[in-house]
Length: 235
Image (cartoon, rainbow, N blue to C red):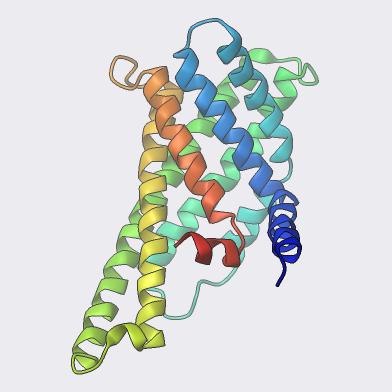
């Protein structure tokens, strides 16, 4: 493969990535929270970028609540324990509610919906829903990591006399474990972001800390949106 072919292939991956609405939303999210970190809640250019990007992101999420509504009514993966299934469904319900209420917030901030007080109330309720979904996500990832740990331990005993890294089943389990661990870190940090946005502990969770945590989780989300080939190269 020539250098031009390699460049064309890499640019193709970039185009594929940027064509995804979810990926563009996460890039904007990184800009939003990066600006929040810089501004620390103080007036200025960074705070303006934070505010305008926050409003712009709401357009990306129009009707997105349908995705989690669909997941809510879809059957869980076969073999998933009932407690994990129930927590996962609660997460879908809370996230769908957050995204639905977020549209009312957008309508209020654009002036289409005139009752600003009610729009702000809906915005606060939506953030509590998002925090709840992040808590549920954290619990699900912890439980799934526990299940994977048991499976990996069984495989290690089975493969103790051979090179376990040559076994495809073992590699897949390790890959799943790494993905779950990354998702756990993200959902745990998003709880702190939600606390910051709701100002539940303003002295401890400052706008700068909220921005820092939000920026990190945005980068994780951007990575999770990468095509499979690009992920394999980065590992």
